[in-house]
Image 1 (cartoon, helix red, strand yellow):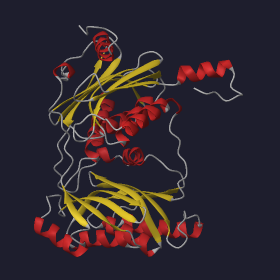
Image 2 (cartoon, one colour):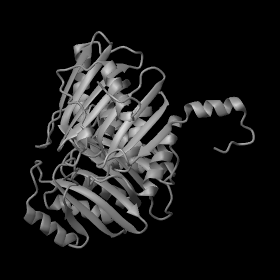
Image 3 (tube, helix red, strand yellow):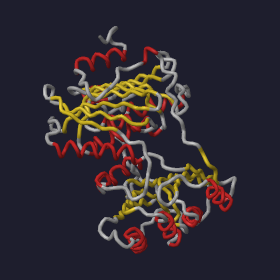
Image 4 (cartoon, helix red, strand yellow):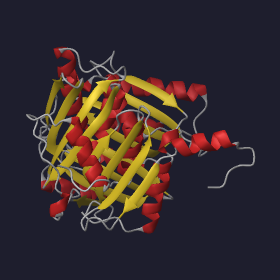
Length: 441
């Protein structure tokens, strides 16, 4: 490492102590890339590490986490979405560099766009109305993500002024946008809970969506639409002898599952001291040993139930309902508003959306159902494709996560909620998988 001329020996020592040690190994297992991270512990550092892997859409097949004392140690077994090891040198270098900088946190910088945060009651056609308002007010949507859950909607939308191509800073125009969107969001019966805010900072979109829905208390609400998500099983029990609360989650596996759960535990101000993550086929089994930031476990039945509700919501928010449609075409003003209006006019409801603009191309993903949450009729889908353009809008299968080729030595101990593993055993397993001891028995 090259040091600036003004760096003294004490500063060098502090930097060395705090800089995470990252090891990436493709030789240990034939079916996964091993990623190890050792670092000084701080609140939220686990989330920052998982976020790096989640942003690359990597599948975490297994993970072992230990953070007792002032140090934390993570081991991840990762693959791409097709179940293959990571062999791209540029990706491996990016992982190593990004994880090596996590101790210092991730900064939010301006990207020259205006961010709009929206929450409110979901309804069929709402997204069409939102994008129509933005198009009418000469706002180009550059990026956006939209989640719906339990009858609520949360969206983070990055826009620029259509005429200038820059961020919207005119206070009068911002007030006009806010007024119009608030009227759309509140509809006839959502006067109090509809919320809109503006920002010039770049945030981690998916983490912010979790925060918006958590503040909106979507986990307490009953769904309006008839959705069919795979229900997560969440149990929480205290281990009195060790002062931990033990959280077990069992659900269908998918990309970014660990990120979603750790994100919500962090936002609820719990600290993960130990965890094991295992997958078997399309199922995921996650076990966390947690405490409050002050070192105490969960202390009441209402709090226990709240944790269960919040973690179920964390799993369900990203659950992909309906048919996945991908739009790829040359971008133009009003394109997004036209597309979602076509969905609405044909009785399709957007349950989740990812909007992006790359150069002059619009690349958007929509998950659509019928008006009550049932699978959309294939004839309606084809009719919509005809109107938008068969070559522009395509039906895509959901990405499959392949866990069938796990090595026999790569099998982790099952994580049934009925058994509380001793911390000594858990740490020995972590050391074994790090290769620091020869046996985990």
